[in-house]
Image (cartoon, rainbow, N blue to C red; front, side, top):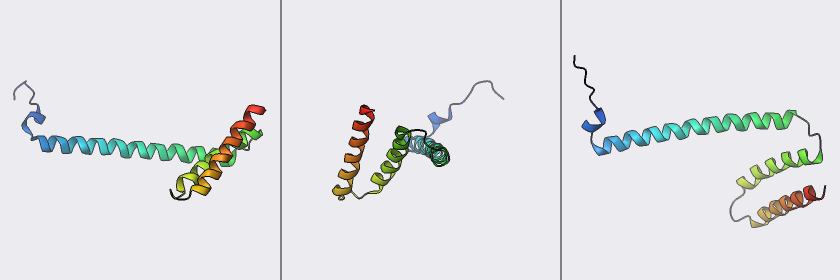
Length: 98
């Protein structure tokens, strides 16, 4: 047995190295998506179980729900997108007034 290390990546082709890099990147993305889904589920559970203590807290819940709704709208549904946008403007204006 020798004491020198062999760097295996030097002995692999460029295509194999790129494939390994892609697999690692994909694994990182999948892990991040899993963590994001867990955090999203935790947030939604808290939004459902903790009652709002003020109108501004209720607006935060409504804003979250409206963002989910808006994300599901088809691009061509400009009418509902504009309605959601107008409601967000109302939330911002009313929160400044209070």
